Image (cartoon, rainbow, N blue to C red; front, side):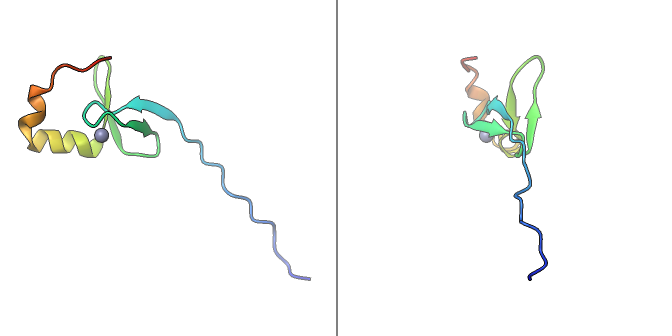
Length: 64
Ligand SMILES: [Zn+2]
């Protein structure tokens, strides 16, 4: 008899944490993200990109 345990997929709890401030895509806790005070979250990569590319600065009209 083959000696092996049934493979059970590890449970990964994915939490929806809201939309990215920059790209407006839904984010999960599986991604690298940053939180802004008092509210708002963004992908870490988007924030970094925004830092480098200041064109995002003109987009200050976000619907919360
Ligand atoms: Zn993003």
